Length: 370
Image (tube, rainbow, N blue to C red):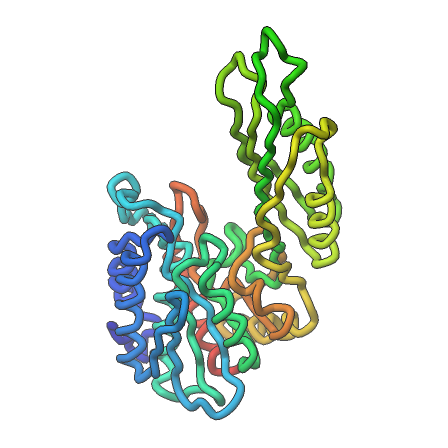
C-alpha cells in the first residue's frame, strides 16, 4: 500500500490509487470468490503494516495491529457491495470536480482505504491493546456468516469504530441505527376453477391482501417503527383460485421493545379464511443500535478531535443498519467514520474529495486517542 507522507497527511492521490484498486474489483455479496479478491488486497496492506492476520469461519478476516495485551479498539469493515458484476460498465469510475463516482466508493471501499491510511499514519505507535480490524464478506446481506465473529470480537474490545460512510449531506457521524428485520410469509390455500366452482377454493392471494394491510398497521412511525410489504407473488393462472402466495416484509425498529412487539404481531397474524394456512419465516436480523451514553461519550471525543482539526461535527440516528448494530448494546460504538458523500446503493454513488481528507484525519485522531 502507498505510504502517505507525514508532512502532507493524508495523501489524496495515494488514497485515490488505493481506492481505484478496490473499486476495479467488483465484489457483489453473491460472489464470495470476487469478495475474497478484495480481501486479499486489504490483507496485503495489513501485512505491510505488521498485522497478525487470520482467516475466520464464515469468510471473515481479522487483522490485529500492535500488542494484544488487553482490551483493543475494534474496527468493523466489509468488502462486499450491493452491485452485480458488470456494474462498472454502466457506472464507471469517474471524477467530476470534487465528486468521485463509482460502485462501492461510498459504501464502503472508501472507508476501508481511509482506515488503512489512518493506520499507516500511526507509524507503529499503536494504542494500548492494539487495533483489531474485522473485514467481513457479507454485510450487505445481513452478515449471516460474520455476525458470530463480530460479536465474539466485541467481547474483547473497549470501543468499536465503524468506517461506514457518514450521513449524506450533513456528513454527521452515526450514533444510532434502527434494527432491521426481514419476514417471509408463505400462504397456502385451496385451488379451484374461478368460474365453475369458486366456492370450493380458498384464495391465498385474498389472504395476502389482508396480510398487507394488517402487517403494515403494525408500524408506529412516531417511535421510528416502519413495516413495509415490499414483495408479493402468487397464483398460477387468472382463472384459478390461487392456492399459494408469498410476501416479503421489511421491518425497521429503533428499540428492542418495538422489535419484540412487531415480532409478536407478525407471528400472531392469521387469515380470516381458516382454510388458508400461513407459515412465517425470517425475523430480526440486526438488533437496534440504540443511542446510549457510552456512545455519546465516544462521539464527544470525535467532536473534540474535529474541533482541533478545524471543522465541526454532528451526529444522528439513522434508519439503515450496519455491523455496528451487533456491538452497540455491549460496547461503545461509533459509526459513520468512512468517506463522506452520497448515493449508497444508488447509481449516483460517490464520495466528496474535498471532505474525505478531514474525515481520514478524524479517524486517525480517534485511533490515537480512544
